[in-house]
Length: 592
Image 1 (cartoon, rainbow, N blue to C red):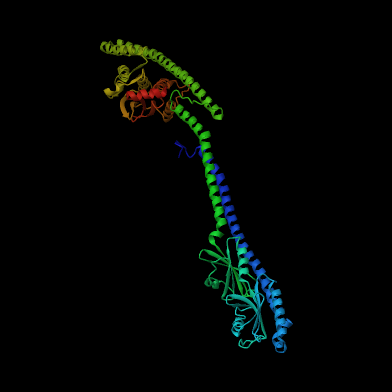
Image 2 (cartoon, one colour; image 1 turned 90 degrees about the vertical axis):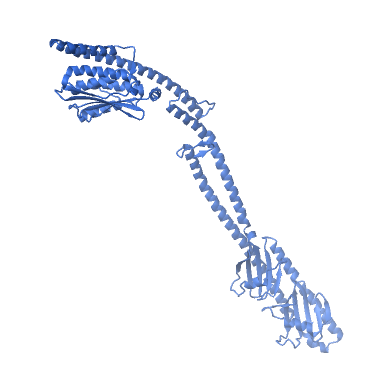
């Protein structure tokens, strides 16, 4: 896992901190999304409820005004002057007729001022061919005008009538289905389309919607708050069936939402239209806030990551790097710092620990070298007296039988042996010299044991002779074979010595066919070599244990002795040493 040019492992404490922080942020972010979604839906519902309330408010207001105007028409249709003028005109003088018409004109004016939605009040007297208007006054008219107005009476399936795009409350007396017969009078209140539109515009100023008022089942008269009224075809799709209670119907078309309210008593429909983008505006605003919250969360995470990287990961990486360098044995490990926090304390303690560790390593190395030299001297002191006594005893026996030639050969080997063992000034020799010494020892023992012992010695490759090893390594192992495996054999004793290479090491196999080795003894010997531990009572393996210790000190724990059962049936000791000079030196450097 890469981060800012560094490498983070998934099990790093910094990664765990980051994951914990994200796990804390995610629920809060999820709750914010839910709140935003709920708030946007709530806002959208509030907008829809506002449209419903707006339609209901205007409906109640308009219904009240229409019922009042309807009541005025019915009330004044029973006015004595208006209802009897047509029948009394024949017995009235011209002055009386004019006086009555003026009186009616005043009453029409009184009706007009009762509501801002009344643009004019008209009164027709077909018998006198007169028309009285609250706005235009009194004038003569022909039959076509009142007939055309009377023909529209109730054409909107209600009290309202539509004539030449004007809306009227009409009342005739007497009511007659035959519009060709003149009634006594026609009283009508004309609604003000201008005032209706003005009120619609006032309602549509808030909410960003357009309101349309249409009259009639087929929406014959349409008044809108804007220049672009809802099309008649779309209005006809809206339900206009009478309902027990007034309900707002929602309809969606052409990326617009329509809210419709139908009044069956007065046969009019209120329709509010709003663009989806206007209705979705609160939701878009909440979405913007959500994106801002997301951006802020990302910024916080990045800032937190940078803070963690600089305050924890970077100094912790320096400390881990220092430990890794120390594990690899690199000298001069030191972490420079000027920090005064907890990491500063750790750095100073680490540097002090490394310095102290180097001192202890040097002291331990010197102690081990001295121990190795002391073990060698001790080994020599153990070997020389023991071997000397046996050799002198053998010479005595040969002298008794007057075998001069064998004495000469034996003493020659014995001289070579003691000359090699007395070289105290040299602690290391070549493998060739060590093997020659071991073969001299084997030859001496062969003379002692005679035909009871057979030596199977493989010639050593000249390439191995230059390997540098500690002195007296192979000879103690050969001595162990003669002492514990072959000395008690009356015949058939075999000592076998062979070589084998694998990768960077040379293995020297020293085997015998002894029959006294048990599995318990073999396991004990193998454990002693692996654990580098020896009990005080294990005097029989002291020589082998010392050899193993010296090889491990010289070449490292990867080398030394291995014990196993030989194919001949006895013990097989494997001596492992590095067989390439550069590898041997590297092993020695690692040990140091």
